[in-house]
Length: 339
Ligand code: CP3
Image (cartoon, rainbow, N blue to C red; front, side, top):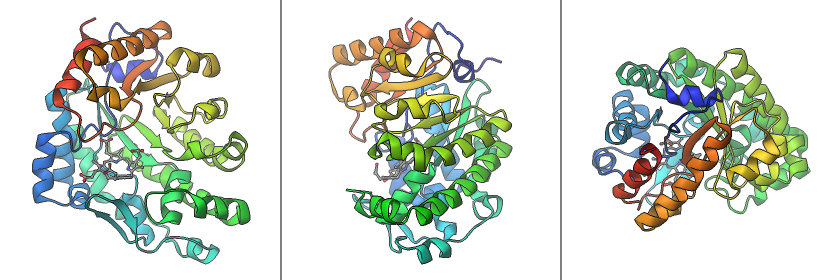
């Protein structure tokens, strides 16, 4: 077993931290933009050959230790009956947002192996082409974050509709999270069957919750998902942006890796979560817009902190920004790997 990513996930101390980047196949890459000139975003997600090609682009260029399936957390909303589009420059939009108990009841249950077969085909293709020492990560959105998009109808800001439903109709809200949780657990299971070596659950907006609400509303459904993944013996990462105040609860989700944004340094995080779980992170993506000395200094700090207790996967604290120079990624990688 020569897969550094999977070794670090199990908590091993390694001379060189494995590394990948959230949104590593994306608009900072000229070869990705070439594909996007010819195909819409959702088209790339739905044609396995294209999804496979763009997934492999950053691996060819940078030899990352893990590839992440090219798709989007919102793709599984479409077979639920959601009308999803990605407009130029304004992110995802949902034409029929979910605002009432009736809307929630109308969401369609579906079999991911049928309705999302194109994603599973992409996974099979990618796994067949990837070198064995590169792990393939499948992913979904977490129920809470998917709910924010469903309810707000697009980029959730300021989350007023979501929180109103959560506070005024707690049972309807819970039923929505359970519905999403059941489908996502099954979808992740199908990804593992198709060849994913590990999975990541993106809970981008969980950080808007106070810890008490996170515990009451979000934690139970996350525990069900991670319990299911643990029964498959598949490593799982939980990532929530701006969630330093939730770390005590996140520790209880049952995930094998906690994904960190840039807000809290790794040693401070370790004081809260202990050493029984691996960590992933946590370079501020905007550091890659700075000069070489700054990139090296900030990267170094994380490498050193990660090595202290082992079980560290180097990543950014959130997705790489589209205006990031390729040379910045090369500098970051040189700093990580020159050890
Ligand atoms: O990480 C990867 O490289 C794998 C692919 C991936 C994408 N989206 C591709 C994408 C993953 C894992 C995601 C997850 C995702 N999508 C999240 C959770 C992680 C996070 O970023 O917080 C969220 C919240 C979404 C929803 C989403 N998709 C938004 C808000 C947007 C628009 C914002 C933006 O960056 O443009 C997208 C579009 C999207 N998803 C792009 C990519 C490469 C850009 C689409 C393009 O090419 O124009």
